[in-house]
Amino acid sequence: MSDASFDFDVIVIGAGYGGFDAAKHAAEHGLKVAIIESRDMGGTCVNRGCVPSKALLAASGRVRELADADHLKGFGIHSAPVRFERQKIADHANQLVASIRTNLTKSLQRAGVTIIRGTGRLEGTQKVGVREINGVDRVLSARDVIIATGSDPFVPPGIEIDGRSVFTSDEAVNLEWLPRWIAIIGSGYIGLEFADVYTALGCEVTMIEALDRVMPTFDPDIAKLAARKLIDGRDIDARSGVLAQSIKPGAPVQIELVDMQTREPVETLEVDAVLVATGRVPSSKNLNLEALGIETNRGFLPIDDSMHVLVDGQPIPHLWAVGDVTGKLMLAHTAAAQGTVAVDNILGHHRQIDYRSIPAATFTHPEISSVGLSEADAKQLATDQGFELGAVRSYFKANSKALAELESDGLMKLLFNKTSGEVLGAHIYGLHAADLIQEVANAVARRQSVRELATEVHTHPTLSEVVEVAYKQAAHALAA
Image 1 (cartoon, rainbow, N blue to C red):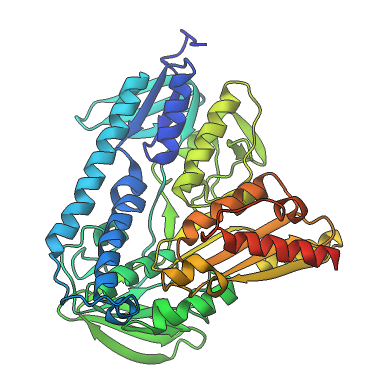
Image 2 (cartoon, one colour; image 1 turned 120 degrees about the horizontal axis):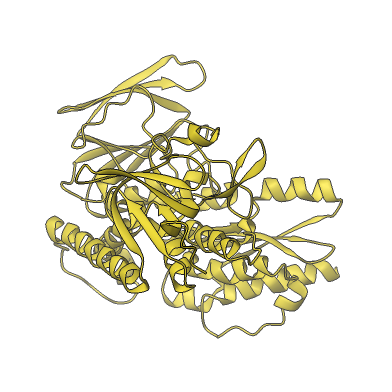
């Protein structure tokens, strides 16, 4: 399918998970592909996000387990005081990053993808400019262009970053030191995961949330239950409704807190370090989008469900965008899915993406996961479409495997259409919640009814029976 009138069939700008999957998928289908990356291959997820943070969570989680004398006593186990080496934990994360980055690069090379190290930009229709690391600047042509430039941590106004005493998740994954007292700004999944790491390794944490409740992006019932263990049960002082108006690096770091509503001063905290975990912003500033008249929404590129970039609501031929830069669901697996959808459309196989069926997980101990609609959105859909919303709860404390593990703190909430039985969403807190959610995600993708799902046999004794019980409760509610 290669077109000799272009330098490449496809040029991908950005080699994170979205760009990687797009480039590899295109090359495997016979297209001539180039991928441009200005930083490390693998993007945020491999180098500064999912991969290193999960390595830290795995190591610190072992420390937490071994140090939990009361939990071990329940098994009749008595452990010696736990010792750990911070540098070796950091090395574990760094080695994993290096290994995955190398494997990813080799995978692209084996597929025949041309890797260009430099900064890419648009130079008009089907044209990409690239300033290579060696300073050479050139313009390449491509039949199709995919933008996959990802995102960067958002640092609110008034916060000064020095990378040492005040830093973002980009620096936190290096675990260069363990502050005695660290403040974490934000209580979303990034803040929660790092609070999990830091408290397991002996740090005192103050969590500062500007919105009116801690964990505001999670299902309220799940958040209430999870907070008992993930926040209240640990050395964490959580504050909501307060804004970190100013943060100045130093020893100590000074944080000026004000009331979120009134902006009246609350207090000035002095801590050893601050992690700013206030979300992420798209990396779209240097793409020369004006060359094609593209207007962003707070930096996010507008796209349709086929991944076409839009101008005035209409798709631009041969220009696509995937991943965090689109702002749809800022998750690595979403980016990867978008990348393959974009390439399939380039190949002429019409495909769209189903965001409702894409799960999300927070890898705390225990984990939190979700898929589909929030309860508020499900209620709105029920009102709009005129059906009754069903909601059931399945508890880990009734699950034999969870009881055997002495990890029965957990809940699954299942949302469904009481008329059709269609699964609309699920929210889980508990042991291995990140794995359990996939079964529900598959059901959402297939728009399945709890009527058929309730008859599926699950292995006993396993945590998956938490899902089975929820399906059966929902099916019973339909019959009632």
